[in-house]
Image (cartoon, rainbow, N blue to C red; front, side):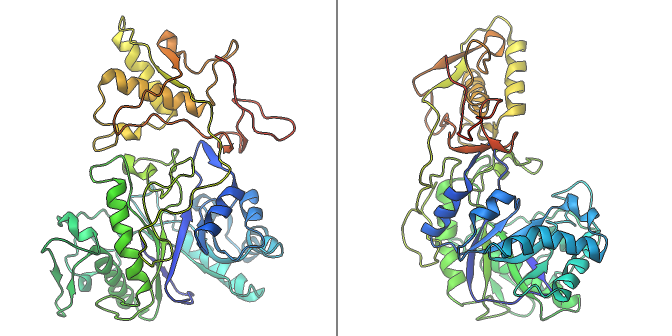
Length: 448
Protein backbone atom coordinates (compact mmCIF):
# COMPACT_ATOMS: atom_id res chain seq x y z
CA UNK A 1 0.00 0.00 0.00
CA UNK A 2 1.35 3.42 -0.95
CA UNK A 3 0.81 6.76 0.70
CA UNK A 4 0.97 9.94 -1.38
CA UNK A 5 1.42 13.00 0.84
CA UNK A 6 1.49 16.66 -0.14
CA UNK A 7 3.16 17.74 3.09
CA UNK A 8 5.59 14.91 3.64
CA UNK A 9 9.17 15.66 4.71
CA UNK A 10 11.56 12.84 3.78
CA UNK A 11 13.74 11.56 6.64
CA UNK A 12 15.84 9.06 4.71
CA UNK A 13 15.40 5.31 4.45
CA UNK A 14 13.01 4.35 7.27
CA UNK A 15 11.60 0.98 8.28
CA UNK A 16 8.59 1.36 10.56
CA UNK A 17 5.84 -0.98 11.76
CA UNK A 18 2.05 -0.79 11.88
CA UNK A 19 0.26 -1.86 15.04
CA UNK A 20 -3.39 -2.83 14.75
CA UNK A 21 -5.30 -4.00 17.83
CA UNK A 22 -8.32 -5.87 16.44
CA UNK A 23 -7.82 -8.81 18.79
CA UNK A 24 -10.01 -10.55 21.32
CA UNK A 25 -7.11 -10.65 23.78
CA UNK A 26 -4.58 -7.86 23.39
CA UNK A 27 -1.00 -7.58 24.49
CA UNK A 28 -0.62 -4.93 27.18
CA UNK A 29 0.72 -1.71 25.60
CA UNK A 30 3.78 -1.52 27.86
CA UNK A 31 4.80 -5.00 26.65
CA UNK A 32 4.53 -3.89 23.05
CA UNK A 33 6.55 -0.73 23.67
CA UNK A 34 9.29 -2.86 25.21
CA UNK A 35 9.09 -5.17 22.19
CA UNK A 36 9.54 -2.22 19.82
CA UNK A 37 12.52 -0.84 21.71
CA UNK A 38 14.20 -4.24 22.02
CA UNK A 39 13.94 -4.66 18.24
CA UNK A 40 15.18 -1.11 17.55
CA UNK A 41 11.89 -0.08 15.91
CA UNK A 42 11.67 3.70 16.01
CA UNK A 43 8.67 4.43 13.76
CA UNK A 44 5.17 3.19 14.61
CA UNK A 45 1.78 3.69 12.99
CA UNK A 46 -1.29 3.26 15.20
CA UNK A 47 -4.67 2.43 13.69
CA UNK A 48 -6.30 2.70 17.11
CA UNK A 49 -4.69 5.48 19.15
CA UNK A 50 -6.35 4.83 22.49
CA UNK A 51 -5.36 6.68 25.66
CA UNK A 52 -3.56 3.79 27.35
CA UNK A 53 -1.53 3.03 24.21
CA UNK A 54 -0.35 6.61 23.74
CA UNK A 55 0.53 6.98 27.43
CA UNK A 56 2.59 3.79 27.24
CA UNK A 57 4.62 5.41 24.46
CA UNK A 58 5.43 8.46 26.58
CA UNK A 59 9.10 9.27 27.03
CA UNK A 60 10.33 7.09 24.19
CA UNK A 61 12.04 8.10 20.99
CA UNK A 62 9.53 6.27 18.80
CA UNK A 63 7.99 8.51 16.12
CA UNK A 64 4.22 7.92 16.20
CA UNK A 65 1.60 8.11 13.46
CA UNK A 66 -1.98 8.42 14.74
CA UNK A 67 -4.99 7.67 12.57
CA UNK A 68 -8.37 9.37 12.37
CA UNK A 69 -10.81 6.52 11.56
CA UNK A 70 -12.95 6.89 8.45
CA UNK A 71 -16.06 6.85 10.61
CA UNK A 72 -14.85 10.01 12.37
CA UNK A 73 -14.28 12.05 9.21
CA UNK A 74 -17.88 13.27 9.19
CA UNK A 75 -17.30 14.94 12.56
CA UNK A 76 -14.45 17.13 11.26
CA UNK A 77 -16.25 19.60 9.02
CA UNK A 78 -14.83 22.89 10.31
CA UNK A 79 -11.61 24.43 11.58
CA UNK A 80 -12.93 24.43 15.15
CA UNK A 81 -13.65 20.71 15.05
CA UNK A 82 -10.28 20.00 13.48
CA UNK A 83 -8.63 22.03 16.24
CA UNK A 84 -10.52 20.06 18.89
CA UNK A 85 -9.49 16.71 17.38
CA UNK A 86 -5.84 17.74 17.20
CA UNK A 87 -5.94 18.99 20.77
CA UNK A 88 -7.39 15.70 22.08
CA UNK A 89 -5.40 13.29 19.91
CA UNK A 90 -2.10 15.09 19.33
CA UNK A 91 -1.25 18.13 21.48
CA UNK A 92 -2.49 16.57 24.73
CA UNK A 93 -0.09 13.67 24.35
CA UNK A 94 2.81 15.67 22.94
CA UNK A 95 2.77 17.63 26.21
CA UNK A 96 3.20 14.23 27.92
CA UNK A 97 6.30 13.55 25.84
CA UNK A 98 4.63 11.29 23.27
CA UNK A 99 6.45 11.81 19.97
CA UNK A 100 3.49 12.13 17.59
CA UNK A 101 4.88 13.11 14.19
CA UNK A 102 2.24 12.16 11.65
CA UNK A 103 -1.55 12.28 11.38
CA UNK A 104 -3.37 10.05 8.92
CA UNK A 105 -6.78 11.50 8.13
CA UNK A 106 -8.81 8.44 7.23
CA UNK A 107 -7.54 5.06 6.11
CA UNK A 108 -7.93 4.14 2.43
CA UNK A 109 -11.11 6.28 2.22
CA UNK A 110 -11.48 5.93 -1.56
CA UNK A 111 -10.99 2.17 -1.80
CA UNK A 112 -13.94 0.11 -2.98
CA UNK A 113 -12.04 -3.04 -2.09
CA UNK A 114 -11.68 -2.02 1.55
CA UNK A 115 -15.07 -0.36 2.06
CA UNK A 116 -18.64 -0.64 0.84
CA UNK A 117 -18.90 3.16 0.58
CA UNK A 118 -16.38 5.87 -0.22
CA UNK A 119 -15.48 8.46 2.40
CA UNK A 120 -15.24 11.47 0.13
CA UNK A 121 -15.25 13.88 3.09
CA UNK A 122 -11.63 12.84 3.69
CA UNK A 123 -10.53 15.64 1.36
CA UNK A 124 -12.14 18.44 3.35
CA UNK A 125 -11.24 16.90 6.71
CA UNK A 126 -7.59 16.67 5.66
CA UNK A 127 -7.61 20.30 4.54
CA UNK A 128 -9.01 21.47 7.90
CA UNK A 129 -6.46 19.39 9.82
CA UNK A 130 -3.54 20.65 7.71
CA UNK A 131 -4.59 24.26 8.07
CA UNK A 132 -4.95 23.99 11.85
CA UNK A 133 -1.52 22.33 12.10
CA UNK A 134 -0.03 25.42 10.42
CA UNK A 135 -2.22 27.96 12.22
CA UNK A 136 -1.52 26.70 15.74
CA UNK A 137 2.11 25.80 15.26
CA UNK A 138 2.17 22.03 15.56
CA UNK A 139 5.92 21.69 15.03
CA UNK A 140 7.16 18.62 13.13
CA UNK A 141 3.64 17.26 12.61
CA UNK A 142 2.56 16.24 9.11
CA UNK A 143 -0.94 15.26 7.97
CA UNK A 144 -1.86 13.15 4.96
CA UNK A 145 -4.41 10.58 3.78
CA UNK A 146 -3.32 7.00 2.96
CA UNK A 147 -4.66 5.29 -0.16
CA UNK A 148 -4.94 1.71 -1.33
CA UNK A 149 -3.49 0.71 -4.71
CA UNK A 150 -6.95 0.57 -6.30
CA UNK A 151 -6.90 4.36 -6.62
CA UNK A 152 -4.98 3.66 -9.82
CA UNK A 153 -6.87 2.83 -13.00
CA UNK A 154 -7.28 -0.93 -13.47
CA UNK A 155 -5.37 -3.15 -15.84
CA UNK A 156 -2.10 -1.24 -16.14
CA UNK A 157 0.70 -3.31 -17.67
CA UNK A 158 3.53 -0.79 -17.28
CA UNK A 159 4.21 1.88 -14.64
CA UNK A 160 4.06 4.67 -17.23
CA UNK A 161 0.41 3.76 -17.94
CA UNK A 162 -0.63 4.50 -14.37
CA UNK A 163 -2.94 7.37 -13.50
CA UNK A 164 -5.63 8.08 -10.90
CA UNK A 165 -9.26 7.38 -11.75
CA UNK A 166 -12.46 8.34 -9.92
CA UNK A 167 -14.11 5.03 -10.76
CA UNK A 168 -11.85 2.89 -8.62
CA UNK A 169 -12.09 -0.84 -9.14
CA UNK A 170 -10.14 -4.02 -8.40
CA UNK A 171 -7.20 -4.99 -10.59
CA UNK A 172 -5.79 -8.49 -11.00
CA UNK A 173 -2.64 -9.12 -13.06
CA UNK A 174 -1.66 -12.57 -14.28
CA UNK A 175 1.94 -12.36 -13.07
CA UNK A 176 4.43 -15.00 -12.02
CA UNK A 177 4.25 -15.29 -8.18
CA UNK A 178 8.03 -14.84 -8.09
CA UNK A 179 7.49 -11.25 -9.23
CA UNK A 180 6.33 -10.51 -5.66
CA UNK A 181 9.87 -11.01 -4.33
CA UNK A 182 12.81 -8.63 -4.66
CA UNK A 183 15.02 -11.68 -5.32
CA UNK A 184 12.87 -12.78 -8.26
CA UNK A 185 13.96 -16.33 -9.11
CA UNK A 186 12.07 -16.49 -12.41
CA UNK A 187 12.67 -14.95 -15.80
CA UNK A 188 9.50 -12.86 -15.57
CA UNK A 189 10.18 -9.14 -16.07
CA UNK A 190 8.29 -6.12 -17.38
CA UNK A 191 9.86 -3.55 -19.70
CA UNK A 192 8.27 -0.13 -19.86
CA UNK A 193 8.04 2.03 -22.99
CA UNK A 194 10.82 4.23 -21.61
CA UNK A 195 13.17 1.25 -21.55
CA UNK A 196 13.09 0.73 -17.76
CA UNK A 197 12.96 -2.91 -16.68
CA UNK A 198 11.01 -4.15 -13.65
CA UNK A 199 11.89 -7.42 -11.93
CA UNK A 200 9.59 -7.17 -8.89
CA UNK A 201 6.19 -5.82 -7.93
CA UNK A 202 7.50 -3.38 -5.30
CA UNK A 203 9.37 -1.24 -7.83
CA UNK A 204 6.53 -1.66 -10.34
CA UNK A 205 3.85 -0.27 -8.01
CA UNK A 206 6.10 2.40 -6.50
CA UNK A 207 6.95 3.83 -9.92
CA UNK A 208 3.33 3.48 -11.05
CA UNK A 209 2.33 5.89 -8.28
CA UNK A 210 5.11 8.26 -9.24
CA UNK A 211 3.76 8.34 -12.80
CA UNK A 212 0.18 8.83 -11.59
CA UNK A 213 1.15 11.66 -9.24
CA UNK A 214 3.07 13.41 -12.01
CA UNK A 215 0.06 13.18 -14.34
CA UNK A 216 -2.07 14.66 -11.55
CA UNK A 217 0.16 17.74 -11.54
CA UNK A 218 2.20 17.07 -8.40
CA UNK A 219 5.53 15.60 -9.58
CA UNK A 220 7.46 16.59 -6.44
CA UNK A 221 5.25 14.81 -3.93
CA UNK A 222 7.05 12.25 -1.77
CA UNK A 223 5.74 8.71 -1.30
CA UNK A 224 5.60 6.58 1.83
CA UNK A 225 4.80 2.88 1.63
CA UNK A 226 2.26 2.86 4.43
CA UNK A 227 1.53 -0.87 4.51
CA UNK A 228 3.62 -3.70 3.13
CA UNK A 229 3.68 -7.26 4.32
CA UNK A 230 3.17 -10.96 3.68
CA UNK A 231 0.44 -12.99 5.44
CA UNK A 232 1.32 -16.33 7.01
CA UNK A 233 -2.00 -18.20 6.97
CA UNK A 234 -5.44 -18.39 5.38
CA UNK A 235 -4.40 -18.53 1.72
CA UNK A 236 -2.19 -20.62 -0.61
CA UNK A 237 1.35 -19.25 -0.40
CA UNK A 238 0.61 -17.40 2.83
CA UNK A 239 3.36 -19.02 4.90
CA UNK A 240 6.00 -17.96 7.39
CA UNK A 241 8.71 -19.19 5.02
CA UNK A 242 7.51 -16.89 2.23
CA UNK A 243 7.14 -13.96 4.64
CA UNK A 244 10.71 -14.48 5.86
CA UNK A 245 12.04 -14.60 2.30
CA UNK A 246 10.05 -11.48 1.34
CA UNK A 247 11.46 -9.30 4.13
CA UNK A 248 14.92 -10.85 3.95
CA UNK A 249 15.36 -9.12 0.58
CA UNK A 250 13.00 -6.15 0.86
CA UNK A 251 14.35 -4.46 4.00
CA UNK A 252 18.03 -4.39 2.93
CA UNK A 253 16.81 -3.05 -0.43
CA UNK A 254 15.03 -0.20 1.36
CA UNK A 255 18.18 0.64 3.33
CA UNK A 256 20.47 0.39 0.30
CA UNK A 257 19.60 3.76 -1.30
CA UNK A 258 19.28 1.87 -4.57
CA UNK A 259 15.98 3.53 -5.34
CA UNK A 260 13.73 2.41 -8.18
CA UNK A 261 14.18 2.30 -11.96
CA UNK A 262 12.34 5.62 -12.33
CA UNK A 263 14.08 7.32 -9.39
CA UNK A 264 17.50 5.77 -8.76
CA UNK A 265 19.02 6.65 -5.40
CA UNK A 266 15.74 7.83 -3.87
CA UNK A 267 15.19 7.37 -0.12
CA UNK A 268 12.32 4.98 0.56
CA UNK A 269 10.16 4.82 3.70
CA UNK A 270 8.14 1.68 4.45
CA UNK A 271 5.88 0.51 7.27
CA UNK A 272 5.69 -3.24 7.82
CA UNK A 273 2.14 -4.51 8.09
CA UNK A 274 1.68 -5.53 10.80
CA UNK A 275 3.24 -6.14 14.21
CA UNK A 276 0.78 -8.75 15.58
CA UNK A 277 -1.97 -10.91 14.05
CA UNK A 278 -5.49 -9.51 14.42
CA UNK A 279 -8.11 -12.20 14.93
CA UNK A 280 -11.00 -9.74 14.75
CA UNK A 281 -10.00 -8.17 11.44
CA UNK A 282 -12.70 -8.15 8.78
CA UNK A 283 -12.18 -10.92 6.24
CA UNK A 284 -14.25 -9.60 3.33
CA UNK A 285 -11.15 -9.71 1.11
CA UNK A 286 -9.90 -13.03 2.45
CA UNK A 287 -9.07 -15.08 5.54
CA UNK A 288 -5.41 -14.10 5.23
CA UNK A 289 -6.15 -10.57 6.45
CA UNK A 290 -6.05 -11.82 10.04
CA UNK A 291 -2.51 -13.14 9.60
CA UNK A 292 -0.33 -10.20 8.54
CA UNK A 293 1.52 -10.14 11.85
CA UNK A 294 5.25 -10.68 12.25
CA UNK A 295 4.23 -11.95 15.69
CA UNK A 296 1.58 -14.37 16.86
CA UNK A 297 -0.99 -13.08 19.34
CA UNK A 298 1.19 -14.37 22.19
CA UNK A 299 4.09 -12.10 21.28
CA UNK A 300 6.24 -14.85 19.77
CA UNK A 301 7.79 -14.18 16.33
CA UNK A 302 6.70 -16.37 13.44
CA UNK A 303 9.85 -16.05 11.37
CA UNK A 304 13.26 -14.43 11.14
CA UNK A 305 13.33 -10.73 10.29
CA UNK A 306 15.89 -7.99 10.86
CA UNK A 307 13.96 -4.77 11.46
CA UNK A 308 17.15 -2.72 11.03
CA UNK A 309 17.43 -3.71 7.36
CA UNK A 310 20.90 -5.22 7.73
CA UNK A 311 19.69 -8.60 6.47
CA UNK A 312 20.88 -10.55 9.52
CA UNK A 313 19.54 -14.10 9.88
CA UNK A 314 17.90 -13.50 13.27
CA UNK A 315 14.59 -13.85 15.04
CA UNK A 316 13.25 -10.62 16.54
CA UNK A 317 12.95 -10.32 20.31
CA UNK A 318 9.90 -11.98 21.87
CA UNK A 319 7.43 -10.09 24.04
CA UNK A 320 8.36 -10.27 27.72
CA UNK A 321 5.94 -10.89 30.57
CA UNK A 322 3.25 -12.65 28.53
CA UNK A 323 1.43 -15.40 30.44
CA UNK A 324 -0.67 -18.07 28.75
CA UNK A 325 -3.97 -19.38 30.07
CA UNK A 326 -3.87 -22.90 31.59
CA UNK A 327 -3.01 -25.77 29.23
CA UNK A 328 -6.49 -26.95 28.41
CA UNK A 329 -8.44 -27.18 25.20
CA UNK A 330 -12.06 -27.66 24.17
CA UNK A 331 -12.77 -30.28 21.48
CA UNK A 332 -15.68 -32.05 19.82
CA UNK A 333 -16.64 -35.24 21.71
CA UNK A 334 -17.55 -37.12 18.53
CA UNK A 335 -21.30 -37.55 19.11
CA UNK A 336 -22.87 -37.91 15.65
CA UNK A 337 -26.58 -38.42 16.45
CA UNK A 338 -27.49 -35.15 14.75
CA UNK A 339 -24.98 -33.99 12.13
CA UNK A 340 -27.08 -30.93 11.33
CA UNK A 341 -26.78 -29.79 14.94
CA UNK A 342 -23.02 -30.42 14.89
CA UNK A 343 -22.76 -28.19 11.82
CA UNK A 344 -24.85 -25.52 13.52
CA UNK A 345 -22.53 -25.53 16.55
CA UNK A 346 -19.49 -25.34 14.27
CA UNK A 347 -20.98 -22.34 12.47
CA UNK A 348 -21.85 -20.69 15.78
CA UNK A 349 -18.29 -21.09 17.07
CA UNK A 350 -16.77 -19.67 13.89
CA UNK A 351 -19.08 -16.65 13.95
CA UNK A 352 -17.53 -15.70 17.29
CA UNK A 353 -13.99 -17.04 16.92
CA UNK A 354 -11.24 -17.04 14.31
CA UNK A 355 -11.49 -20.10 12.06
CA UNK A 356 -9.50 -18.64 9.17
CA UNK A 357 -6.68 -21.25 9.39
CA UNK A 358 -9.31 -23.74 8.12
CA UNK A 359 -9.55 -21.81 4.83
CA UNK A 360 -8.06 -23.30 1.62
CA UNK A 361 -4.30 -22.98 1.84
CA UNK A 362 -4.44 -22.36 5.59
CA UNK A 363 -2.39 -24.23 8.16
CA UNK A 364 -5.44 -26.30 9.17
CA UNK A 365 -7.06 -26.87 5.78
CA UNK A 366 -6.14 -30.60 5.89
CA UNK A 367 -8.30 -31.46 8.92
CA UNK A 368 -11.26 -33.81 8.66
CA UNK A 369 -14.76 -32.74 9.66
CA UNK A 370 -14.49 -33.76 13.32
CA UNK A 371 -11.12 -32.03 13.65
CA UNK A 372 -12.55 -28.90 12.04
CA UNK A 373 -15.29 -28.85 14.64
CA UNK A 374 -12.75 -29.36 17.43
CA UNK A 375 -10.65 -26.49 16.13
CA UNK A 376 -13.68 -24.17 16.04
CA UNK A 377 -14.78 -25.21 19.54
CA UNK A 378 -11.32 -24.54 20.94
CA UNK A 379 -10.98 -21.11 19.38
CA UNK A 380 -14.33 -20.12 20.88
CA UNK A 381 -13.34 -21.59 24.26
CA UNK A 382 -10.07 -19.64 24.30
CA UNK A 383 -11.78 -16.41 23.21
CA UNK A 384 -14.16 -16.68 26.14
CA UNK A 385 -11.36 -17.06 28.69
CA UNK A 386 -11.71 -20.86 29.04
CA UNK A 387 -14.86 -20.46 31.11
CA UNK A 388 -15.98 -23.91 32.22
CA UNK A 389 -17.43 -24.06 35.73
CA UNK A 390 -20.70 -24.72 37.52
CA UNK A 391 -22.17 -21.38 36.49
CA UNK A 392 -20.81 -20.89 32.99
CA UNK A 393 -19.42 -23.21 30.35
CA UNK A 394 -18.04 -22.09 27.01
CA UNK A 395 -17.19 -25.69 26.08
CA UNK A 396 -20.70 -27.13 26.15
CA UNK A 397 -22.03 -26.60 22.62
CA UNK A 398 -25.26 -28.40 23.37
CA UNK A 399 -23.45 -31.38 24.86
CA UNK A 400 -20.96 -31.72 22.00
CA UNK A 401 -17.88 -30.25 23.68
CA UNK A 402 -15.41 -31.58 26.21
CA UNK A 403 -12.27 -30.17 27.87
CA UNK A 404 -8.89 -31.84 27.30
CA UNK A 405 -5.63 -31.41 29.20
CA UNK A 406 -3.52 -32.77 26.33
CA UNK A 407 -2.72 -30.75 23.22
CA UNK A 408 -5.00 -31.84 20.31
CA UNK A 409 -2.91 -30.07 17.62
CA UNK A 410 -2.64 -31.95 14.32
CA UNK A 411 0.55 -31.56 12.27
CA UNK A 412 0.88 -27.97 11.04
CA UNK A 413 -2.46 -27.10 12.64
CA UNK A 414 -1.83 -25.74 16.11
CA UNK A 415 -4.71 -25.52 18.56
CA UNK A 416 -3.73 -22.31 20.37
CA UNK A 417 -4.04 -21.31 24.00
CA UNK A 418 -4.90 -17.65 24.50
CA UNK A 419 -2.80 -15.21 26.47
CA UNK A 420 -3.70 -14.22 30.02
CA UNK A 421 -1.84 -10.92 30.38
CA UNK A 422 -3.96 -9.12 27.85
CA UNK A 423 -6.72 -6.60 27.32
CA UNK A 424 -10.13 -7.76 26.22
CA UNK A 425 -11.66 -6.28 23.08
CA UNK A 426 -15.24 -6.53 24.31
CA UNK A 427 -14.72 -4.69 27.58
CA UNK A 428 -11.70 -2.58 26.48
CA UNK A 429 -10.29 -3.59 29.83
CA UNK A 430 -8.78 -6.68 31.33
CA UNK A 431 -10.41 -9.93 30.33
CA UNK A 432 -12.33 -11.74 33.05
CA UNK A 433 -14.85 -13.99 31.37
CA UNK A 434 -17.48 -11.32 31.78
CA UNK A 435 -16.63 -9.40 34.96
CA UNK A 436 -13.56 -7.31 35.71
CA UNK A 437 -11.38 -7.57 38.79
CA UNK A 438 -12.07 -4.66 41.08
CA UNK A 439 -8.39 -4.16 41.96
CA UNK A 440 -7.36 -4.02 38.30
CA UNK A 441 -5.72 -7.45 38.24
CA UNK A 442 -6.26 -9.72 35.27
CA UNK A 443 -8.93 -12.33 35.88
CA UNK A 444 -10.17 -15.29 33.91
CA UNK A 445 -12.80 -17.95 34.35
CA UNK A 446 -11.48 -20.84 36.46
CA UNK A 447 -12.84 -24.30 37.03
CA UNK A 448 -13.59 -27.46 35.08
